[in-house]
Image (cartoon, each protein chain N blue to C red):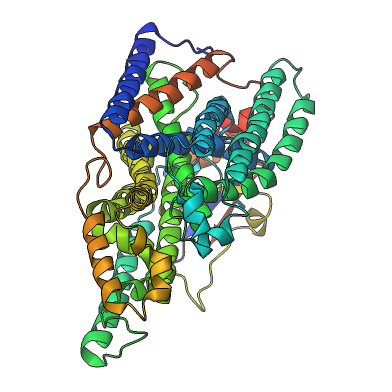
Length: 439
Length: 174
């Protein structure tokens, strides 16, 4: 079967999940605080997560093309189809960007003009952290990514019709890919700063962009494994066998270790440097999110490391599906941990409870008002460590929202997959991929 | 060690070699070894070679390295010679991680190299008999140990070589 059709039952299930997601988002919106912080942070969290997966699919497709890699060609249509989600990513992120212009939400501290005016740190960053740049990157730059995603897929589908040994489309895809790699590589780093890192507006880490990107990458690989197993279960992609899973497993394994490397590098440098402005990021998470903080490491490092270290576990679809589901959720939690504490902090400050106890303002006065400041910090810490459902751990509404977004992603992916043959028969590397042997 | 009488055939192409090895397996011929200038895909399963256990040894060496590094640093910095660095506690786990990682890699790699050489009986000063110089270049070789074989068995082997179109058949004592 070289032509995928979305079964009616699957469509019903996906629509059901999307409605569940909408319902959960609606409930979150109604039961939320005055700023709808929980709703908007969930929205941002899932939008960023799935847009990133689509982006990394395109990035990896292009990188493989440039690197003369052939093993993935048999299922490369999957990645092409993922990348088409970028158009939805533009819409989702445009909604967040509009929210900054028109004050729907208060996800970003730097978007609050009054805070910026009284805050030298935010003022210093306002050349980059401003609504204009946010919109430019979220809409225009992701638009550029989408252009490449469209182009790569268009050329790949056209290539199906050529005579054998006609590599003109392949060459043209290589050209587009070689343009996309530097463009995507540099812009994605800046986008991560805007979308995720600027939530903790005072804080920065030079490693952060890589850390986020690798988190996206591992998630993308897990989604790939899961969809391939699903499609194989439905009788598609008979050509994909244990050898392809073995390679995907090696990627999941390797990049889980790389993710840990980046996580640890970021953590250790900040721990060693021991500068208050930097350690606050981990202090917040260790104090208020201890379970998630350590679970993050166990799910995303210890588990894939120990399980996928062996040869045979990567070749078994059962093990791979279990591990990839867990790791996918693990990286979703990783983004949860990046986004939620900062949003809650901003909401606390904007709601006026601790306007005076602002971290940077407090610093200058610390010497003169030592005692008062200390009391304020203690008061503040107490507030942060309060358990808030949907912030401290994901609640049912978060899970529902995630399922809704996942269903949207999968539905659009499958609609794209329907539009072209599943295997690119005229790709120059197709034979290599069909006869791929790892062991 | 007693010298071995080896009957071997040379093949020009790995495809012919693969077919010949399959043929030998089907006729239950007891192959001593197969030599090729490069790894031939799919040869190991036909020869019935089991998966190497070297990586399992590697894992054990790695764990030994991890424990050695971590426990040694723990002992040094909490019991033997506690020093405060940069206001950090004595038992500063994050600071130990890089060294633990390095020693894990070092133990695993050196352990695996030494194990590999020991298991294969190789090392400095050990020479390996070569059946024919060209099997390190462009020839593929199937070898049978015929030291204690009857003349009929040797005949079977020779027939096998001619049937599977070996380009040369010779014997050598190694």
